[in-house]
Image (cartoon, rainbow over all chains, first blue to last red):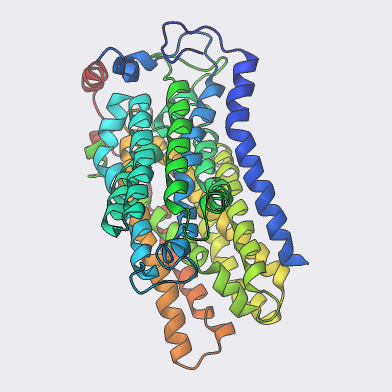
Length: 43
Length: 459
């Protein structure tokens, strides 16, 4: 995907997957680590 | 100049075929970075040992002095959001995101230099002032863009972005600890190097967001979306100019609504660890209290998406009514669950309270859009952020001072928070009343069509 609007075309599924993966993977990693740590509260 | 022209608003307009679902990840690129501010405290203790390494030396920085870094950053978040809101709105999201990336990343680099030469004022200037401006610009920059792309679900759209701000600390805290351990040696604390890496990584991540973001073409509507023919009473189809909004009672009532909701939430968020240990002595240790705080972060993050999305169906006003009414009941119940020793219900109570704290942040941009239209919603949101700055001082001060007063008066530590909880419940009543008083903005505040066209043309 171009940063300019001139070379833009229809967004592909791959671009969507990459964009969501780019932000989703770190977020899920953070949530997982926090949940594992939080479970100590109930042990 | 040619290279920088890609930052212009006109170069950010999407071509046909661009998916609006690319815009939430662009917004998340920004909010997942700037939300790191909530985890900045992990650097505080290591920064008290920059000279002494294993323990603080007499010339090392004090924790009380280091606490100012975060406070300055939050002050400049509110200040820059309020002052630069119009610049953000008129220049488009990419220019603002680009500037936010340079400021936030640059703030880390300047702070790294301050740490390496052991000059605290440089860290204040770096992370506090420069980073704080990056926080403010980054916080408001994607909001109005998302609202324009999702006229059918504005709450859900802004909720997704602001959810990132709530979840960022869950990434930043372990990342910071890992980087410091990577760069530390027996004779050196790796704070400066960790700052450099984080500054560069965050700047790159934010620049990706600036690259992806697009504005919808004028007149664009989602496929199949038909604006309601019968406008809702509290949803305007008109626009209010940014500074005109300040002259409306609605702006100040929403200001009070946000301030009360945040004051109540932030007060307990900052004291959650100590509170859980003191209300459940022997059952909750310092280590498990960390887990409790982490769990609250998840509720805070999830609430931003859940409540903001829900507000698209039940309305903003009703959503805040739930926050204040349910919050009142839950705050009043906390002392009971504490005295009954019911840890699970205590955690659940605070989880729901924190979900509504996050939900308050995430729902307010859509509330502003309903009241003041989409044209200047980002700038008006920037002005409203001052409510957060006030609440950031009011909440912790209320909790800390009332707790201390209770303990000094001979109240056992386990019960020292009871009065605080009742006062927080009282604040929610004030918020409930302010929300109740909100009505549609008077027609005389609306921009006329010629003015709107002129401003759009200039922008």
